[in-house]
Length: 401
Picture 1 (cartoon, rainbow, N blue to C red):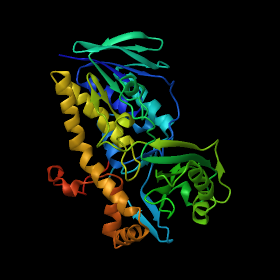
Picture 2 (cartoon, rainbow, N blue to C red; picture 1 turned 180 degrees about the vertical axis):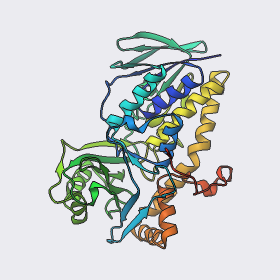
Picture 3 (tube, rainbow, N blue to C red; picture 1 turned 120 degrees about the vertical axis):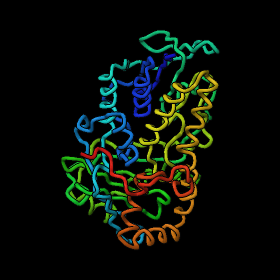
Picture 4 (cartoon, rainbow, N blue to C red; picture 1 turned 90 degrees about the vertical axis):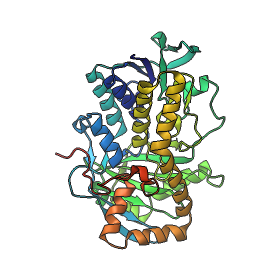
């Protein structure tokens, strides 16, 4: 029997959930407090996994005006060692850059084209009724909506989670990131994706992701610790733009656009609250970001699809919750634990330098490290035999023509 589902939040996790529920025959309404297009502070990078999921949702990249595919990555260690990591040339896209203002708007319009109702400028206000018979939610400009399930795709500080009394006081995420769009990029950053492992950022890194029109998304992410104050992070941001190798990549006459933005990154899928009663949390609301790279779009898409499939498979709220938790364990938990271990290793300069030296051993290690870094295969696939397959590290990318 089809369910009525209210999705709160129209970012990648919310729209992936909506598209999947609609395909499965359920009645879906999506609300978001924002009016699209709206910016979302993000590195804008799409991994192979994210690209394959978008392709599976029948999303057309041509909807994103500044969609930029990438064929290789230049990685630089704090010792000055440069490593060129080529992505496979066997067909399809393995990495792309898509500005979130454009990507999220395009996903909203993709869902509308499917016949899904999306209300913009309509913020969640409160849960007015929640029991074994259903759940009622008050939404700005829409009044009270009664449905079978609510999917909260409303971000790290989820108002839905807060309304249920499930928020963690003072939670600021595991990572923090800064981002700014840069214009008049005349160095290699105009066409090449750069990743810099700076000693003061480990296990984090700085990046420059190319965009059309000699522009780039430049930023850095850093693990939160008691020693890394807000002042430290702001000072580091200003200093990064003056470092010679970064100025060389961006070009001497690069022009920062507007002001930089900063955001916390939630990365604790192992301990986050995943559901409560008739409510499922997805995307940043379930803290699904990869704790090694800070990548969150692919994980957001996965959680949205998992929530939709769980609602479709479950015969009761308890069944749905159990199915959803099992799905997250199956798809994300092992990879998260692997990322936690690797982050601890890369936090130490000696081991970070050793890992990069191994990566640079030969063409095979360089190419396949790039595939692993961009999630062509699950992070912990070697340790999870149930995910082994015959085309390991030999599949084509997404959108192969």
